[in-house]
Amino acid sequence: MPGFTPFNSNYSDLSDENGYQFEFRCDICGSGYRSEFIRSNLGTAGNLLSGAGNLLGGFFGSASRVADTARDITDRGARDEALKKASADLQHHFTRCPRSNQWVDETCWNEERGLCINCAPKLAAEMEAARSAVELQQMREQMQAQTVFAGDTSTRATVCTNCEGETVSADVYLLTDVRPALLPLPAFAGLRVDFDQQASELLLADLRSDKGMEWVPQEAWLTKIGIDVDASTLTYDLAVDASGFGRPSVVDAGFVLPDVSGERGSIPTGDIVRWFGGLGFVAVGLGFVAWLMRARPSPGNAA
Image (cartoon, rainbow, N blue to C red; front, side, top):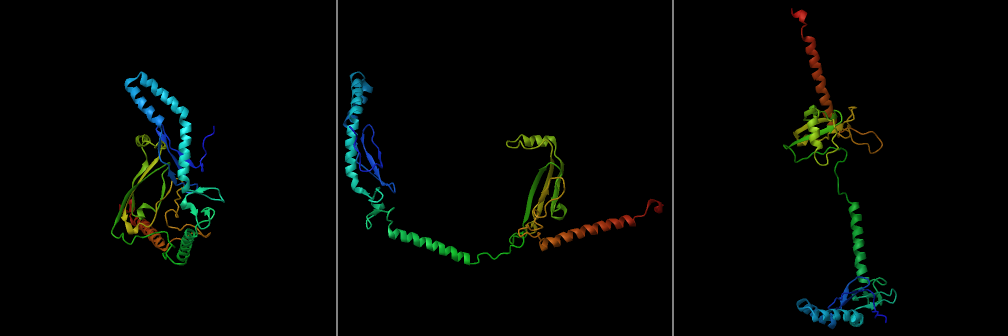
C-alpha cells in the first residue's frame, strides 16, 4: 500500500525511534514550519523493555527484541499517519502559486497580485531597491566629475615632508652568481659596501641547511650594503645587475621615468643635478691626482 503524499514535497523527516516530526519549507526562501512531535507508543515500550533487558536480561531481553520487530513492521503506517496530520496542520501556512506551482509562505506571497514574488515582485520592495541602485549610480557619476586628486605624477620619487631629521638604517644582502653592478654608486648615494667578495663554502652550506633554502648554489658572490641616510634624501631605489655585463637599470634605480607613452624616458631634474654634481666631483678629484703626479719631482731630479 503506497504511503501518504503531502501537499508539498519540500519537507524534512525529523522522526526518530521515539516518535514522528516533520518540517515543511517555503520553495523560495527556505523558511519552514515544524509539526508537533508525536510520540510512538511502540518506541516508548521498546525503550522500557530494552532498559529492563540490559539490567535483567532473559525474558525482558526477548521482549525488547519482539518490540523492535513489531515497531519495524508497524512503523510505516504510524509514520504515514503522523505525516498526514503534520501536512494538514501546516498547509495553511503556505499558498500555491498558480503560475509557478511553488508552495510559498506569507513572506514570499504577493497578496495583491495573487502570485508568488518570483512571478509578481512586491512593488514597494522593488521600488526601494531601484531607488538605491539609482542613488549609487548618481553618486558614482558625481564622484567621477569631481577632482579628488591634484598631486604631481610627473616624477617617480616621493619625498616625505614629515621625515626631516629621521634616519633610515638598514642592511641589504645580495647573493648572486657573479659580482653585481649597483646603481646608484654607493659612494655617491650615502650607501656603504660592508662586504663584497666570494661567499665561503661554510656559509653557503649553513644557508643551504635551512628549510626551504635548497636553492642556495655551491658558489656565489656575497654583497652586504649598509644604508644609513637621512630619510628626506632617500629618493631612489637600488638597481642590481647580476648578469656580469655591468648594466644596472637607470629606470629601476628611479633616475629615469619608465617609458609609458612610446617616447624615451626622462630624467627628473633633481636627479640630473645630483648626477652632474657627482660627476663633477669625480672629475675634480681625478684632475687633482693628475696634477700631483706631474708636480712630484722625479728621483733623478731630486738627487
